[in-house]
Length: 264
Image 1 (cartoon, rainbow, N blue to C red):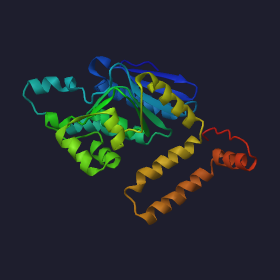
Image 2 (cartoon, rainbow, N blue to C red; image 1 turned 90 degrees about the horizontal axis):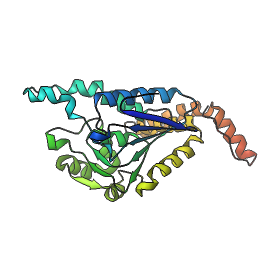
Image 3 (cartoon, rainbow, N blue to C red; image 1 turned 120 degrees about the vertical axis):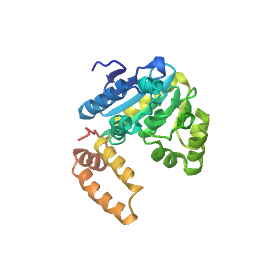
């Protein structure tokens, strides 16, 4: 796949998506947003790809929206209706990550701001470089957090701290992000891509259909009662139990051997 602001490559069952708008710290231009959606859709359909790493080129993971895309109407004194911008872009992109049928690992290499935080939080696991920094930033231009940040951030770090970061726009370093639960792991910069790929490869070798169903169950749990959630678990367990990987896992356990999962 060839893109203007994206680099996509594969190593075995792991595909790496590199945002390549480095001059703007991988700000989410309309082009980059559209290309991310195309790449995620393509990789989601590819049976050879069983895990995805999302990262950025240069000093930034993603600095959020590319405000240059709205420069002309602002310079004319207009007040753009931003809902259309969101619905055409982020509101389609973010669910593609959370609902991806395979695990998605964020390798957070540098600056994360605005919608970039949503992009990272939409991923299943976040590994951050010691050089990474995080800021909701929206309030600094008179806006509210979008791209799912109002949903993700309180669930990741708790409402009080999420609200504080949202209304102050304060920047936090990687160590603080780890302490708050914003990221899962912090590593030296030269280990970031290696560790992200190693984790992705480990997950790719697991029963990835079951992982997709686990993601679905966890996503629903916050809006369901216990009884409703247990019923969903029963339904999804039927789906998992019908997979080749379930049979392989049980047989491998009984035969005391290492399972060979295929994602089917």
